[in-house]
Length: 301
Length: 227
Image (cartoon, rainbow over all chains, first blue to last red; front, top):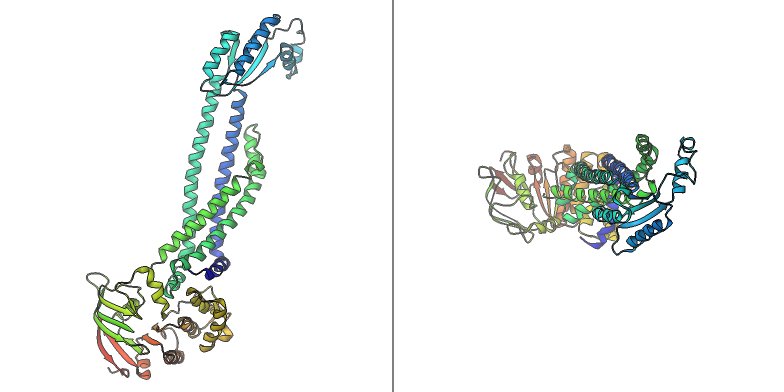
């Protein structure tokens, strides 16, 4: 293929795109449908995963209590031991928050309907303990941390939701895994549908391809305009899908997702880096590969 | 020059389309190929275009040895041929001008040359005023003239016309044949496959008759309907 032919072949791809309006529109619509199904599925799974991750972060803590809070020295010793544990090399403690018994009482009183019940308690007869809310980094080595904390605070003064955390964590992993495979299956189905649609558009022009071959066009010369057309179809579908996906997410999906549970919706801006790029990649891949493969079938004349 | 030496072409072991063809067509000749349906006329043109491969023997077309030629060289062979089909085979989504220009683009012709030569060919086939029309807007005869213009656009040495008058009326058939004679006078070898014996009789050119895959007669000066 000669270099001087390249502008012509690109132009030919554009012309072909317009002149085969019905077929290219059909291909674009199929691509948009596939992209929207994939995109919507992705944002739903991601929101669910994000929600579960947030929940698990909230229970990713171990609470250690000190009841003998009047003994200032003991409290200081335990806090110092906890600080030492934090500073230890490869410490599994991400951070800890110290909630004094006064703060704990205040927090409880602030809860709805609790003020009256707790009105008789004050600084002098506060029954609540001093609390250290310790966030851990790694679930796999958390038992070691538990033992170290038990040594400092005593076994009966340690409370955690490790069982719950593990269950939530497993749920999150399962959703990620199932989501991944469902996405992969959907992607394969989408690619097959798109390829079949492009195949149909090429099949409709198989006679043109044959004539091109009869008058001496090389394979590259015949294939190039179809690939340019495939790129345009993929590009147009990706742009339209991105816009539609945005409105679908902010206008419909977000309401549906938050309607089922008190989920903080992931802002649409979070998806700017991934969804359009994924649509573009899918559109271009499907457009180029499907065109090239489909044309190749009709080149042999 | 075109040379067939003991050419056999069979689609499968039971169907021999051409059997032991020996034939030489020299540069600048005008040759009719006639015969009843299924005699092997179209197979012969398919071999010339390398649409089908010969089963045995030797076939040379304008220096290309088709019996040994690799697939990748087929486009270059076809560029030395101008082919016209009964059903025109124009690009329906290209204008008349673009259909002719396309053949020139295939060989990598410069834009300036295309702009100069396409109007010349359209003038030759008397379609200058229909350059911007699409094939669907033309009559059968006009479409065939576009196909002729496209076939000679790259100045091929050989023009093959497979039943070129099959889809047009008598007057247009004569006009198209006149056009082929003019193309022949430009020094090109012209091969016309037809079953229209009236045309063969009228134009009195070398005529090959094929029957059951064998050349049964090769006469100069044409044949009469009685033959």
